[in-house]
Image (tube, rainbow, N blue to C red; front, top):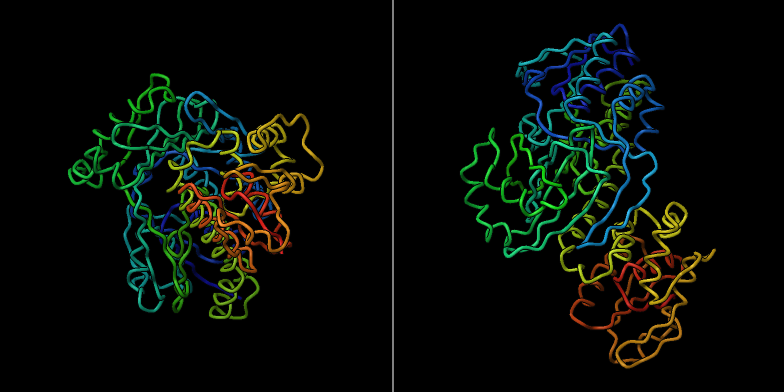
Length: 481
């Protein structure tokens, strides 16, 4: 399909990347990016790119990926509770400063022949272009303008988070809770260059209010940072920060917003990235979603006979992956909401629970990638040393005995009908799908925290999920049916 002109609203990662790909595929097309802020107006800290995302970017545009990787910072992952830290090898996990990423993508777009107008605020209606790509972020004015036509829904999360940084490179990414007199704050932190780390802190509304941050949030202008919160949290996470302080950049407490749209396009306007869909930061998905959606959009435009057909095909092809990631993100978001309630779980076992929390990483895969971590977690699960991981780790987890509530079970996987044999066990049904099983394990874990033993009936085809729920302390018994 021929396009004479394409306008991109927004100079974030998704907009710049899509503009470059568009120009590379269509040298004769006039591709223009309109960014309302000057280049110096960029704010934010580090951006993470997982291995799978790097593979997708490599296939679409190896030149720009090489430029990104050259300036990125590689790191491992860890979880730390109290004085215990467990480190997880993370393969090719990288992070890069958001400002530096935008510089690279901007240079790559210009090198391809894209025209960029900074400090320019325009609307889709003002532009005389064959196609308008609205990559104008979570606060998208374009989405608001066409909200009725696009079927927009924005759900605001209860918990609060604050995005900041610090002026040294942490030795590895770390998830760490700190329990204070006000409640629990949890840090998600990772290094992204030699003298910088991202430091995101989240908490529940009650803790936020008891610490007085409802008042400091009201006093903080949108273009300022909540210095009171930064000072307080610098003290709370003093051990992790090693004497350094937290740095703000328009840093204030926020509630995450999950954006969904019934359709992503209207006429010649198509939404891209956070303008169309958001997924919780705990799976590090914003930049990934935007750039991968840019790849899918350009491919659909290449194949489509006309604009409407191409944009419809883009949605048809891309929406399942986006909605799957949003579902995964919702489960991850709920897991982090309840994270402080799991702090009685040994860290080694807690890390297994974290990695398998949303059904995205299997226990078998985790055992292959990080055998020492899984062995330590399973030792905590079984109550004895695990010198060597079994070949069938799922079967091993299911076959462990359990003594609890004055009863003995020879294996955690009870025979059919076995969950009805004891009044001391709350029995739940996992349904027949992966999604319903994950929901059942969520419910089981909440019941288990009341002190009840909990068992879940699970289809035998989902025995892997059952083993993950057992090893992660979400359920006591399973009945495979």
